[in-house]
Each structure stands twice: as structure tokens, then as C-alpha cells.
Image (cartoon, rainbow, N blue to C red):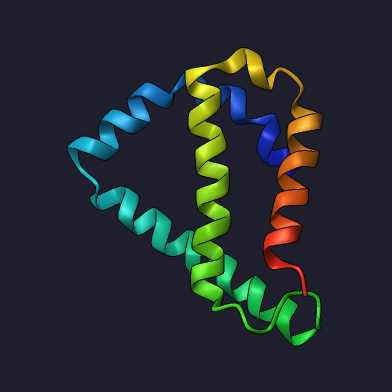
Length: 104
């Protein structure tokens, strides 16, 4: 989360372009999100096998939820960057939310 939130400012600066591109042609973004869900779902399955992640969760839906959480915060940073001035606090909040979402 610390690495991810560390680049949020850069992503937010490009937010308008990214959201406009998604609206114009969702194809490349669809492929990106498929790969992201697949890769994260693999990690979730590993965590389930080790008892670290709730076994009842469907891995791809859980992955989509985590990505949606991060994407939603990124959109908010684009709209109102001053609220997210402390990347460390944001990383802690996101990590806690993801832990609670996936908690075994």
C-alpha cells in the first residue's frame, strides 16, 4: 500500500486523461483490469490456502473489490487532492480496509 499510495499523486495528475480514455475506449482498460483481477485472485487463493484470507470469498470477486476500493480512493484524490496529503496515513487506511475485506 505504501508503494501504491506513493504514486497516487502522479496518477491523480493524469486522472482526467485516464478517465477520458476509459470513456472513449474501454478495451485496453478491460484487459488491464482482467490481468489485475487474475493476478490478485491468485494471491488471494494462496492466502486462503494458508488460512490468512477468508476461505468463503470468491477470489476474483474479492480481487475486484480490492481494486474497486483502490480505484475509488484514486478517483477521490483526483477530485480533491488536498484531502489525501499524507500518503502514509492513506496507506494505513487502505491496508486496514483491505485486511478487513479479506480477513479470515
